[in-house]
Image 1: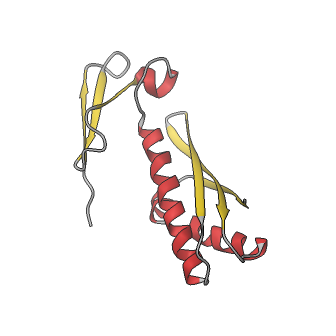
Image 2: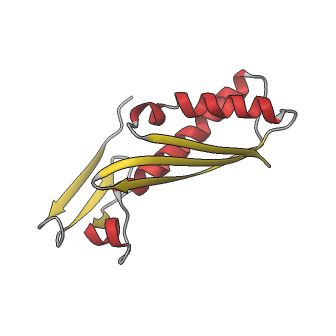
Amino acid sequence: MTSNATAVWNGSGKEGKGTMSTKSGVLNNAHYSFRTRFEGSEPGTTPEELMAAAHAGCFSMKLSFVLGAAGFTPDAIETSCAVTIENGAITKSALTTKAKVPGITAEKFAECAADAKANCPVSKAYNCEITLDASLS
Protein backbone atom coordinates (compact mmCIF):
# COMPACT_ATOMS: atom_id res chain seq x y z
CA MET A 1 0.00 0.00 0.00
CA THR A 2 1.21 3.49 -0.83
CA SER A 3 -0.14 6.66 0.79
CA ASN A 4 0.06 10.02 -0.93
CA ALA A 5 0.26 13.66 0.10
CA THR A 6 1.21 16.91 -1.59
CA ALA A 7 2.80 20.08 -0.25
CA VAL A 8 2.87 23.42 -2.05
CA TRP A 9 5.18 26.19 -0.81
CA ASN A 10 5.13 29.81 -2.00
CA GLY A 11 7.76 32.39 -1.13
CA SER A 12 10.86 32.44 1.02
CA GLY A 13 11.48 30.09 3.94
CA LYS A 14 10.65 32.61 6.65
CA GLU A 15 8.03 34.80 4.99
CA GLY A 16 6.45 32.21 2.70
CA LYS A 17 3.57 29.90 3.37
CA GLY A 18 2.30 26.59 2.15
CA THR A 19 -0.43 24.03 2.14
CA MET A 20 -0.51 20.27 2.58
CA SER A 21 -3.16 17.94 1.20
CA THR A 22 -3.70 14.19 1.29
CA LYS A 23 -5.19 11.98 -1.39
CA SER A 24 -7.89 10.88 1.09
CA GLY A 25 -8.95 14.50 1.58
CA VAL A 26 -8.43 14.40 5.34
CA LEU A 27 -6.01 17.26 4.81
CA ASN A 28 -7.17 19.65 2.14
CA ASN A 29 -4.91 22.65 1.70
CA ALA A 30 -3.98 22.66 5.39
CA HIS A 31 -1.98 25.83 6.07
CA TYR A 32 1.60 25.75 7.34
CA SER A 33 4.32 28.36 7.60
CA PHE A 34 7.43 29.35 9.51
CA ARG A 35 5.13 30.95 12.08
CA THR A 36 3.04 27.81 12.58
CA ARG A 37 6.12 25.62 12.73
CA PHE A 38 8.51 27.60 14.90
CA GLU A 39 6.48 30.31 16.64
CA GLY A 40 2.98 28.91 17.07
CA SER A 41 1.76 32.43 16.35
CA GLU A 42 -0.89 31.64 13.74
CA PRO A 43 -3.36 28.83 13.03
CA GLY A 44 -2.09 25.94 10.96
CA THR A 45 -0.24 22.66 11.17
CA THR A 46 3.39 21.59 11.03
CA PRO A 47 5.17 18.58 9.60
CA GLU A 48 6.09 17.58 13.18
CA GLU A 49 2.45 17.71 14.29
CA LEU A 50 1.55 15.36 11.46
CA MET A 51 4.46 13.08 12.41
CA ALA A 52 3.19 13.03 16.01
CA ALA A 53 -0.32 12.09 14.86
CA ALA A 54 1.09 9.36 12.63
CA HIS A 55 3.21 7.91 15.44
CA ALA A 56 0.38 7.98 18.01
CA GLY A 57 -2.02 6.31 15.59
CA CYS A 58 0.43 3.69 14.37
CA PHE A 59 1.58 2.79 17.88
CA SER A 60 -2.00 2.45 19.17
CA MET A 61 -2.96 0.14 16.33
CA LYS A 62 0.22 -1.95 16.68
CA LEU A 63 -0.33 -2.25 20.44
CA SER A 64 -3.84 -3.55 19.78
CA PHE A 65 -2.40 -6.22 17.44
CA VAL A 66 0.34 -7.17 19.93
CA LEU A 67 -2.19 -7.43 22.76
CA GLY A 68 -4.46 -9.56 20.56
CA ALA A 69 -1.61 -11.93 19.74
CA ALA A 70 -1.01 -12.28 23.49
CA GLY A 71 -4.67 -13.18 24.06
CA PHE A 72 -6.00 -9.80 25.23
CA THR A 73 -8.56 -7.47 23.70
CA PRO A 74 -8.17 -3.85 24.76
CA ASP A 75 -11.29 -1.87 25.64
CA ALA A 76 -9.43 1.36 24.84
CA ILE A 77 -5.96 2.63 23.99
CA GLU A 78 -5.27 6.37 24.11
CA THR A 79 -1.88 7.55 22.93
CA SER A 80 -0.44 11.03 22.65
CA CYS A 81 2.85 11.86 21.01
CA ALA A 82 5.16 14.86 21.16
CA VAL A 83 7.71 15.26 18.36
CA THR A 84 10.63 17.58 19.10
CA ILE A 85 12.62 19.52 16.51
CA GLU A 86 15.91 21.09 17.61
CA ASN A 87 18.60 22.74 15.54
CA GLY A 88 16.99 21.65 12.28
CA ALA A 89 16.57 17.98 13.20
CA ILE A 90 13.81 15.80 14.62
CA THR A 91 15.41 14.66 17.88
CA LYS A 92 12.66 12.88 19.80
CA SER A 93 9.26 11.27 19.54
CA ALA A 94 7.72 10.82 22.99
CA LEU A 95 4.76 8.43 23.23
CA THR A 96 2.42 8.42 26.22
CA THR A 97 -0.27 5.76 26.29
CA LYS A 98 -2.99 4.66 28.66
CA ALA A 99 -4.94 1.52 27.98
CA LYS A 100 -7.79 -0.40 29.50
CA VAL A 101 -7.08 -4.08 28.94
CA PRO A 102 -9.19 -6.56 30.93
CA GLY A 103 -7.24 -9.37 32.62
CA ILE A 104 -3.70 -8.21 31.78
CA THR A 105 -0.95 -7.78 34.36
CA ALA A 106 1.14 -4.62 34.47
CA GLU A 107 4.22 -6.65 33.54
CA LYS A 108 2.59 -8.25 30.48
CA PHE A 109 1.20 -4.87 29.39
CA ALA A 110 4.67 -3.29 29.66
CA GLU A 111 6.08 -6.12 27.52
CA CYS A 112 3.39 -5.67 24.86
CA ALA A 113 3.83 -1.86 24.85
CA ALA A 114 7.60 -2.19 24.41
CA ASP A 115 7.04 -4.59 21.50
CA ALA A 116 4.63 -2.14 19.85
CA LYS A 117 7.05 0.77 20.34
CA ALA A 118 9.88 -1.16 18.71
CA ASN A 119 7.85 -2.64 15.88
CA CYS A 120 5.20 -0.19 14.72
CA PRO A 121 6.04 0.91 11.17
CA VAL A 122 6.34 4.58 12.10
CA SER A 123 8.82 3.82 14.91
CA LYS A 124 10.87 1.84 12.42
CA ALA A 125 10.89 4.81 10.02
CA TYR A 126 12.03 7.40 12.55
CA ASN A 127 15.71 8.11 13.11
CA CYS A 128 15.44 9.74 16.52
CA GLU A 129 15.09 8.90 20.19
CA ILE A 130 11.73 7.26 20.90
CA THR A 131 10.45 7.19 24.46
CA LEU A 132 7.37 5.50 25.91
CA ASP A 133 5.38 6.10 29.06
CA ALA A 134 2.78 3.32 29.16
CA SER A 135 0.20 2.69 31.86
CA LEU A 136 -3.03 0.86 32.45
CA SER A 137 -6.15 2.80 33.33
